[in-house]
Each structure stands twice: as structure tokens, then as C-alpha cells.
Amino acid sequence: MKKKKLWIWIGSVVGVLVLGVAATITFGMFNKNVNVTGDELNEMGVTVQKASEQELIESILVTGQIVPESEQKVFLEPEKGVISEYKVTENQTVKAGEPLFVYDSSKLEVELSRAKRENELIESRGKTEQSQISELNKRMADMKKKMETQKTSTVHIESEGAEEPKEPQVTQEDLNQLTNEKIQLEMQYENTKAEISSASEQITEITTRIKDMTVVSKIDGIIVKINQNIANTETGSNESVVHIISSQPYKVIGTMSEFDAVKIKQGQAVVVRPKVFKDREWKGSVESVSQFPNEAGGGGEEFGGMGGGSVTMYPFKVAITDDTSELRQGFHVSLEIKIGGGEKHLVVPHMALIDQEGMSVAYVLTDGKLERREVKKGSMNDEFIEITEGVNLGELVVITPNDGMHDGMEVTSFDEVD
Image (cartoon, rainbow, N blue to C red; front, top):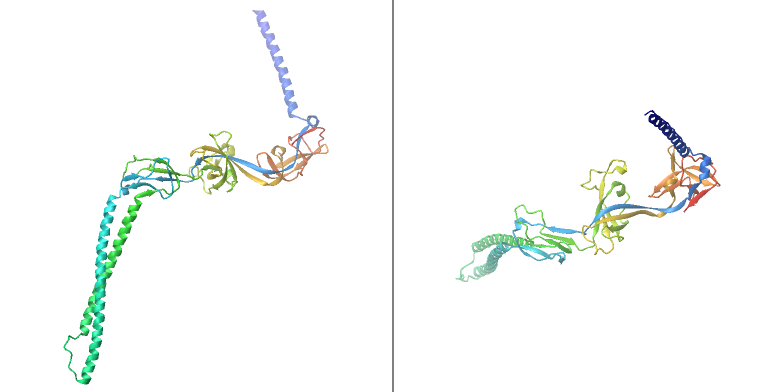
């Protein structure tokens, strides 16, 4: 038993010694990696790249869904009654203005016939009144002529002493009576004209209602669905009777974050990649980016990678300029929108800059020594950043800087990358 205890004690001592040696070695190696001296850095060498002029093209990636240019959904109108006839079938192509279906208009047809008969009677009465007025005008004209003749005859009789004529004499009282009759008849005819106008308006109104009983397509498109089994209730239905989508090329809609929305402009080129087609793409262009946030996401969505705050989403629309015959409504797509380009800038890789005391610093290799340069930055993309001051075109910029570097450090070897 004593021998066994002794071996256990000896094993424990050896284990402690081994762990101590391992810890010492590990600590020494750790210290060597952290405390890199200038000479060690010089021996390791540096990697450099020439400052160059490039177009800063940035690719923004968003997702969207393929939708038709426009669509029309026709719902039941309970006040019009029941549908008597469908003029189209599913998958049929229609033009704007072509009939889709017709409501039963038999009652309106009866009303229209009645209104037309009434209008004919009123117009006939009006024509009679016009004839009577014309007749009175003729009688009054004849009466005035006779009165003038009588006046001339009376003067002649008085001057020559001839006998007075025996035929009845026309008096002013007779003329006044005809005038009053004419006035009464003209007033009656004015009322008749008002009735004619009212009857015509009624005919026009019923005719318009009958025309509205035929529902027409408002767009050129394809009949997607016809539902003939919708119940006709007083409140109508939330489901459409006929659904039409535009036959124009498809478009893409979606939403993008506020960070992307401020960069996107109308007309920018877009590459559309449907998820159902591998290694295929369609060309397009930005049609619009709304100035107003998406209703569903107007309050913002959480994006942890963007500072942990909420991000507002804005609707956008992309027009597909290539042939869309192989695409279908509802396809999900990824979109690549390239922004920038056209103008070249002096750039270096992002990793060439380090922050020291709140300043952006780059190290430039000149005649075998490092020069510490404080630089000013401009625009950027995912890989490069513009340098507006501090570095010149063609200079070798260290793209693997670290805190062990300092101004004037000698470098005997370096690797240059394109």
C-alpha cells in the first residue's frame, strides 16, 4: 500500500513540471507574436500595391418579385343584378374595350321602350302645337292686311260719298283675341319642349345604364381567371369575377433599405436573376424608387448589421428590357444594381488604411523606407476607397499595415500585387 502511494505522488510532481514547461513555452510564443520588433518586421517583409485610378462601381443587391405591368380585377356590382352572359374564357387574349361579361338588362330594356313611346307622344303633341302657332301667325297676318285695306276703303268712301261695304269688318279686338291665343299656345309649347328634353334625358340615362351592364376590359391583356360561382350579395364579394393581367413585358417590384434608396437613380442598369433559372439573367433598368416608405414597413425593420437600429424600407420598380416570355408572374428574383462609374478616382484598397489617433493613415514604400502619410478619403465601393490627399498615383502603398510600423522604417524585401 505504501509503495502505491509513493508512485501516485511521484506522478503528480512530474505532471506539474510538464504543465509548467508547456505554459512557459506557450507564453513565450504568445509574447513573440504580439511584440513584433522593427527588425522582425523588416525580416518578414511587406505587401504593397500601386495607387491606381479606377471607376468606383458599387453593386447593390436586392430582391424582388415579378409582376405584370398592370392588372384589372373586376368585382360583382350587386345593384346591377345577375350576370346573364360571359363573353370571354380563361387564357384568352383581350384588347382594351372588349366585353368581358354582361349583366341581365331585360328590365332596363322595358324601361327604355316605355320611355321612347312617351317621348314619341310628347314630340307629336309638340308638332301639333307648332302647327297651331304657325296657323295663328298666318291668320294674324291676314287680319292685319284686311285692317289696312279697310282703313284705305273708309278714307275713299268718306271722300267720294260711296256706300260702305257689306262684308264683315275686322276689328282690333279680333286681332287682340288671336294674339292672346297665340301667347297661350306658345307657353303651352314651351312646357312641351321641356317635357321632350326631359324624356330625351331619360332615354339617354337608361341607354347608358344598359351600356354599363356590359363590363369591358380596361387593358390589353390575358384572362387569368374567371369565377362564375361567386354569390351575388348586397355587400358584394372580396373575390373578383374576372382577373386580367397586362400582356406588356413583366416588371419587378420590391423594397430596399434607406441606405440603398438614396443611392439609386431612375434609369440605372439592373441585372435580373430569377431564382428558378440558374446562370441566366435578364437586363433591366430602374423605373422608380418611391419617396415614401413601404406601408408594411413604414415603422422600420430591425437590421442588426447596420448599427442595431431600425431601417425604413422603400418600394421600387424595375422595368425588364429583355424578352420576358419565359418569365412568370410571381417569380422571385435577385437584382444587382450597379452605381457609380464613368469618372476615375485615385484609389487604394480599404485594408491599406489604418486609424491612428482619429486620423486615417497609409504607409507608402519609397526608396526602401516606409513613409507615414495622413490621408483624406472620398467615395468608395466594396473593395477600394478614394484618396483625395496624401498619396500620389503609382506610389507603392502597404496593404498589410500594423501598429509595428513607423515612419522611416527600412524594408529590404516586399511583395507587390496587381
